[in-house]
Image 1 (tube, rainbow, N blue to C red):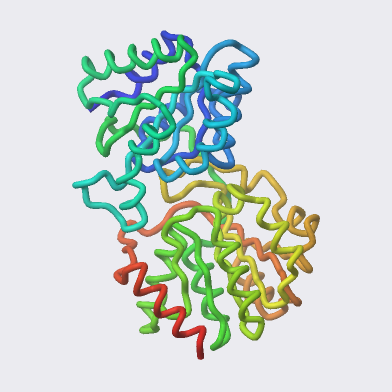
Image 2 (cartoon, rainbow, N blue to C red; image 1 turned 90 degrees about the vertical axis):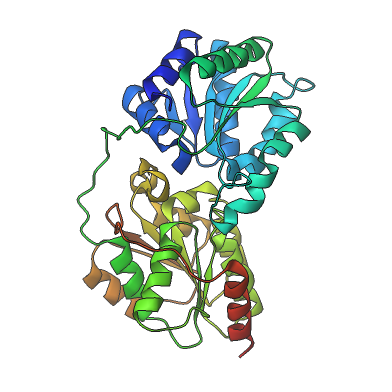
Length: 372
């Protein structure tokens, strides 16, 4: 495996000292090293991957030096637009180094939401005309691949290094942003789920939130038919919930969102507000971290999400940080759309499982439930 310090120093030697992106579990060691060794001006955890390409373009325009954009391969969809209409040689011809975690690589077992993306990861790069290497796990070979990438950047090309599982040696994040919050996300999820009516349904975002909701239902010997577990499509749960809420106005629809996911496509909140579904409750479990991919920070606890929701037109908002306040808020929800921000501590149970039903089974069970 490659030492994170070796990889980063090779980039630094060639003038790459600015990083932007969205953290990924396959890149958590390298992302942790970057976080510990670069200040906030040189490591920007972006709202989404496309925005990170924009940041890299701005850095190049100001300094003449390319930046590195890191992401999970699920983020390739978000970067296609800026790669095709901003950095492309036929437009502004701006060099960017892409660091892409290869979830769902063919032949390697992974979660269902990564299977399709894993199959098309390199094909998308080929279609976009972006040269790439799958980074070797041997440092001498990796050094040659890095040199090849640098040569491409000097020609003002975009170049990608695709990262397999276990490419980088372990590195634990030292500069951990802590908060003094006491309620766990799992406790908050259980509290909200227990307050739902019989006809209510939940759309839960990708990552730990869907996993914890699934385990709550199992622990309570309940079925999963009322929950749509959005195991992929980060940032889009609010719009899935909106689509259901508009089509089923007689049911209360709850969106269980995370701070990172809500920020990723924050403009969607404006659409929710504009459509004004009275049966819509947007719950954001905010711990200020991308908890599912290594705990890298978001700006979730540094911004006022209820104020954002209120500004775009949500009918009511509330923010709580303990169970007593949460229980009281759930008893006094106003007509929707409502935003409920629940501030929770970071982390999760080490023995937290994953859904045992397939996405297709989950979809069909929910659709049957919504017909009743």
